[in-house]
Image (cartoon, rainbow, N blue to C red; front, side, top):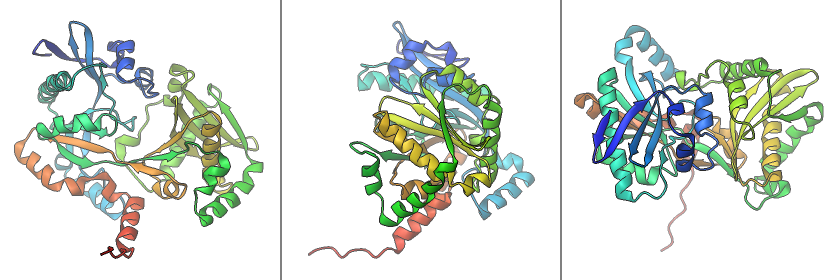
Length: 387
């Protein structure tokens, strides 16, 4: 516990130790809110209080961070070899702000604070995190996936405390404002539109079911998620591991905020989507598919258009489809919203090395889809400037 200028900052045993209404006031309308973190089994959080109650709250997590986590492809193979040979060199204790199960660093801040009051609350929080990291032996303090709306005000405060910015994986978002289905398809290139329509011809063999309760299929959903992870070429270690019973727990804890979309081929569950629902946004949180059945029926394209139709039909203007698998999302019209990790090492020499190595530790540098996109942009001829 730390006290500073009338503020009291302390570590608490999870989000459930914080007032649900106070959290919601600082994160209004967020599907990944108090109920979500409770469902995820979050057992560590931090908060700043004053005489009126909660000023600032945030989820925390601990892990051994592997330095090769961002690397993919051949470099990931080298990283795994180094980890086997030199585990103490490759694995650093980390105190993380945010959650491996969230795509954004959610900080609940009491509405109506002045910038100065908010800065004092953050300073009290940072002092507490330094104290907790030293107590637990964590070498790193990391704010995971900072983006809007927190980034504009949080970034300068972290930079002032010499946190190093390390690029994370951007989040794909599709803007559907003012569009119907035909209008959305018209925004795509002719080739993409033709390819999508071809793939959707097989939808007649697929039965699509929307539901919120999954008691009878929860185990099959977990199997599909594991199948998709196994078939993915990307590996992010603990950042992609879900706690046992995750899907059932989320369904029970968040009624009215989640939608499961099931894709049946005959009597077999071939794919699922977990959608989180906000007032103007649908978050496509997880997708799981059975292989090769899903490929045979083009279920990625089928599920994409189902989510587009459903978002438009329910009056929501944004379809958020998360991190990774960017090639298809960009082809289908999504934009990428930047995300940044802020890192500080308690060892000053290692902290300087992290600052120098930040471009190499960036997650977006090694994603194959983003890398190919950058290479194509670099090869594209530049238009001459008008005199």
